[in-house]
Amino acid sequence: MTSRKFFVGGNWKLNGDKKSIEELANTLNNAKLNPDTEVVCGAPSIYLDYARSKLNPNIDVAAQNCYKVAKGAFTGEISPAMIKDCGIKWVILGHSERRHVFGESDEVTLCFNALWSKCHCLWSTISGSVTGGTCKELASQKDVDGFLVGGASLKPEFIEIINAKA
Image 1 (cartoon, rainbow, N blue to C red):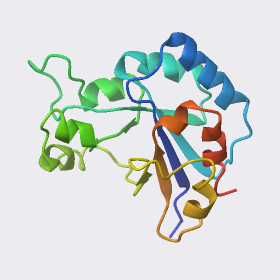
Image 2 (cartoon, rainbow, N blue to C red; image 1 turned 180 degrees about the vertical axis):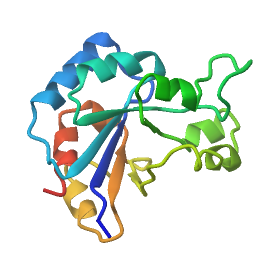
Image 3 (tube, one colour; image 1 turned 60 degrees about the vertical axis):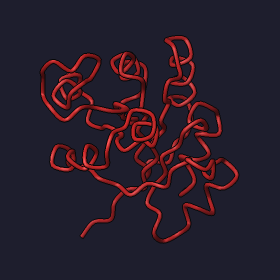
Image 4 (cartoon, rainbow, N blue to C red; image 1 turned 90 degrees about the vertical axis):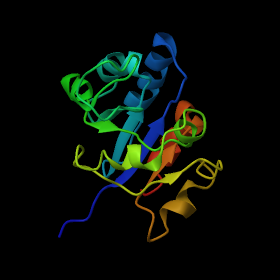
């Protein structure tokens, strides 16, 4: 049995424009990142192709959400098929704001398990607990195999978080 790589996902949420994405990509591309950590950046859907074109190939890109069907009359949604068609292998699901603001149920999130082959248990920054200052201690916990980072993924400290297991 092979062990999984440590995983760090950055969820950019509703942040970014081409200029800031290019700056963030340059920062990540020029940093010395732990090769034993899988890094994925969740870009807003309109910037998925742009982020993919700017980030080095060793940094994956994730969609921030998707709907459960391949196509249809679901204005504004994106499907797993569309995400895959853009060369994106990841999607971040189960956001608290999708449940609280948009009324999505846990069942909507759980239906995606069969669509995506990679699953990781992530420690989220919902309470702001994963930062450059706390990441090494959290990464040392035996049941933590990665982080999903919010606002800190837009800052230089994201590199420190990526390298927390080094």
